[in-house]
Length: 352
Ligand code: SAH
Image (cartoon, rainbow, N blue to C red; front, side, top):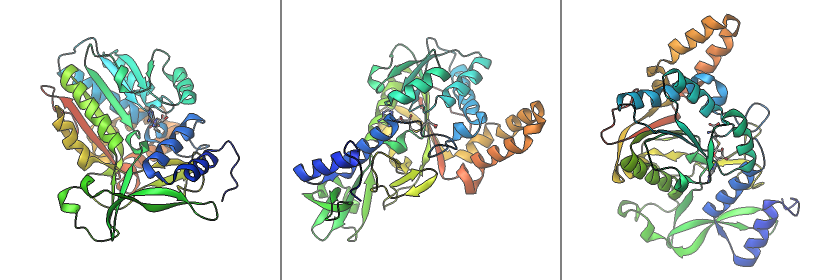
C-alpha cells in the first residue's frame, strides 16, 4: 500500500497527514485531480476514459448548433464569446466552432483549463483560443456562449456523515499499514446541514460540491450582467439524494479512489437539483435539466447521423454505434444530464 515512490502525491499526502492530522476529502480530491490532469492526456481508448465529444463529432456539432440558435434568436449580438470549461483535448470546441461557423457565428474563443499538458493539446485543435485559469479573467464586454462537458464532476466534493455525536466531515487518514482510509472528523458540522437533515439516521452521508455551486454562481452572474447562454453536461441526478457517489476510473476500470491518488480520475455525480436554484438565485434563467439522450435526439441527432452516413456509407456501422452510445437509455442517454441556462430576456433553449 505504501509502496508509492517518493515524489508521488501519495507520499506527500502521507507526510502531510503525519504532520497535521487527517485532511478533508475535498482537499484529497482537489489535489489528486490537479496532479492527474496536470500530468497526462487521459482521454480515448488508450487512456483512462472516453467522453461524449471523443465518441462522435455529432456531439460537439449539436452543442454548437444549440448555442448558435440561441445567439440568432437573441438578435446576433457582437462581440460574442465562446467559453468552454475543462475542454480536455479541445474536440468539443473544434466541432462546436465548425458548426457555429456554418451557422454564421464566429465568436472569440476562451478556454478555462488548469492543466498545462492539456492546454498544449487544445492549442492544436483550437489555435485561435485564449486560455484562462479560472472564470475571473473572462472578458465582460459581450454575451458568453458557454459549454462545460464533464467539468463539474471533476471538482472536489465534501462529504458529511451522521455519527452518534452529530454530523461530521469525512476526512482522509492513514492506517497502520500506510493505506488511506476515511473517517469522521472531530469538528461538529451540524450547522452546515439543512434543517430537514439534522435528525437523519446514523450513517447517513450527504455529498456537496461547493466548487460546482461557485462555478454555476459565477456563470449565472455573468449571464445576468453580459447576456448569453450556457450548457452544463455531466453525469448526475436531477433530484436530491444521499450517499457517496465518489468514484475513480483508470484504464476504463473502476478502481479504489484511495489506492493511488493522482493516478486515477476522481469524479462524483453532479447534483443538478441543487445547481438550478443556485443559477436562478444569481440572476439566470434556468431553461431545464434533461437527459442527454432526449436532448440530442430533439436537436436532430438522427438526421445528423443519416447525413454523415450518406457522406460516408462505409462508416454506417460506426456512426450508428456512436449515436446509440450517446443517446440510448442504458448507455449515456439517461445517466448524463444537460442543464441549460440563459440570461433573462434570452429565448427558451431547444430541447428542454
Ligand atoms: N470536456 C472534456 C474533458 C473532461 S475532463 C471532454 O468532454 O472530453 C475534465 C477537464 O476539466 C479536463 O480538461 C481538466 O483538466 C479540467 N479541469 C478539471 N478540474 C479543473 C479546475 N479546477 N480548473 C480548471 N480545469 C479543470
